[in-house]
Image 1 (cartoon, one colour):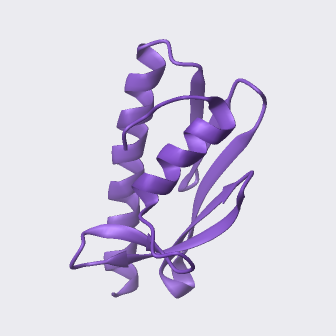
Image 2 (cartoon, one colour):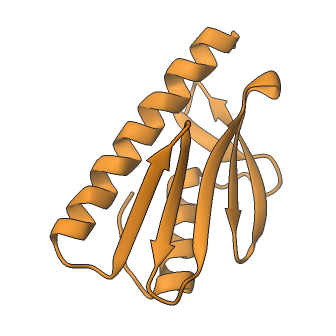
Length: 108
């Protein structure tokens, strides 16, 4: 994956996640988010945070949460970000993090 392809894919992912989070906020779920400088922060009512950022040099998406830090690479065949440690998708891990950190059920 070239740097340009990575950035396009990463930014498309952020837009999709922001849309899901905006719907959650509009539905009065107890979650908020901030997006700036190609970073997305999920803010939970108990003051915990999960942060999604990029590492362009190695074409990875990083997720920092209370449960740890995770690195993801985009799998073109699966059309999904896959964790380099546990082979789980970003969507699944975000659902679990929202449940663990904010007791919120979100379908990513």
